[in-house]
Amino acid sequence: MSVYFYLKMANKGSVKILGIVGSPRKRSNTEILVKKALEGTKWVATVDAEMVLLRNKNIQLCKGCYDICYFKKIRCPIHDDMEELLVKLLKADGYIFGTPTYFGGVSGLMRIFMDRTVPIFGKLKDKIAGIVSVGDGKFGGQELAAQSIRTFCLNHSMILAEWHVSGTAGKRGEILNDIDVLEKARKMGQNIARLAVILHSKMTP
Ligand SMILES: Cc1cc2nc3c(=O)[nH]c(=O)nc-3n(C[C@H](O)[C@H](O)[C@H](O)COP(=O)(O)O)c2cc1C
Image (tube, rainbow, N blue to C red; front, side):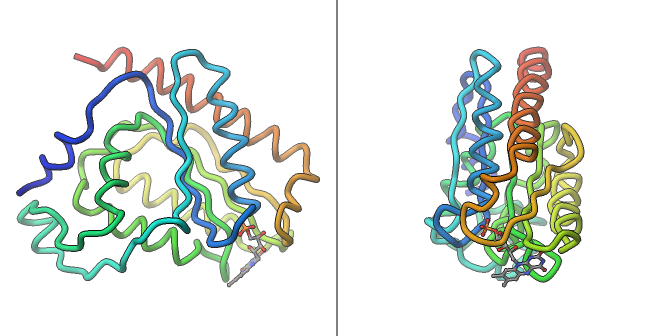
């Protein structure tokens, strides 16, 4: 079994944008911003948008058996919800990755998710990506959390649509008070969808 297992499962159709939310709490600020960005994608016709809440998924830690999934290109030996998520990643043309800021970095959930994408390394080239990060401090490290996702995206040779959108909010749902950041997220989603439609309609053989 090889990486082609995941590719075969990823039946391509219309332009798809996937939102990935890395907050472990319900009604999170990150979820609100990612949802807003996905609403923005709807401004572009023929776009399918879907949101994945990592907190609802069973994703185990990467065991680091790099020789199996990376060098030999054999399927990841861990059988959990990441199998389904790798297929979703391959199917999608663009992504909005969202994370809360935890100690100046991404959440553990987002970290685990990113590490488990090694089996499809090299297959996400030219997918369009956008990033949102939320922290309760004005300079709480949202930038660093976003940077961690940015390096993940660039490692995978994705195309970053624009600079990240970062919000300042602490309590659940508090981000709803910040109309500016909500609008920035919506616009980012719209831009990602626009670029995905342009690029992927041209690239389809
Ligand atoms: C473990 C932990 C670490 C945190 N570290 C930071 C931090 O370094 N900087 C910051 O601004 N906020 C920090 N926060 C606050 C969260 O980023 C903030 O509550 C944010 O709104 C959470 O987003 P969410 O609602 O999407 O989960 C931390 C919260 C937790 C639980």
